[in-house]
Amino acid sequence: MAGSGVLVVDFDLLGQCRDQMKAVREAFRTLKSDVSDAAEDWGDDQIAGAMHTFATNWSYHRAKMSDKLDKGVDRFDTVIKTFQDADNTTRDMACQMVQVSK
Image (cartoon, rainbow, N blue to C red; front, side, top):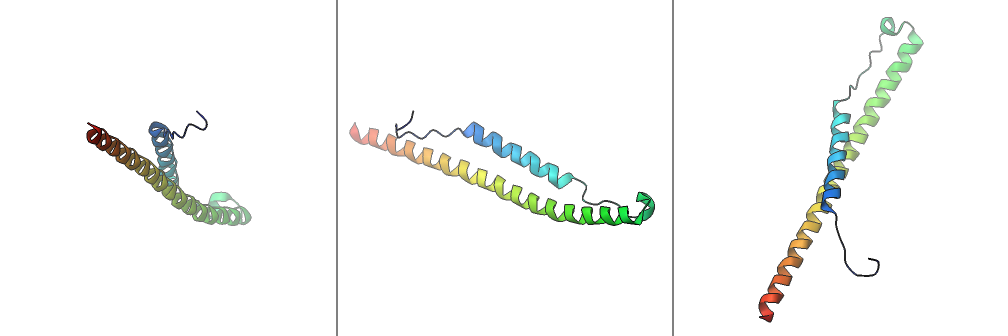
């Protein structure tokens, strides 16, 4: 409800997003990072050179993406923990207020 002042955090959705990002991260980690650049494998020195360039770029960018995915998973964990801690603190404060008012 807009303007109600109530923040609702969908922990299930956050957890699902984190788990999906973890799955993507694991897929990146297990992808083969090397491509044979031997001319006899490719049949042509130009193709071998192009494949070597591709493999080098792929390895570099795959590592960068893997690092970014690691940071993304860590951020999801931080957000989930922060909101869970806030929920627990709010619950504890509400319980204390109820106890004081009795």
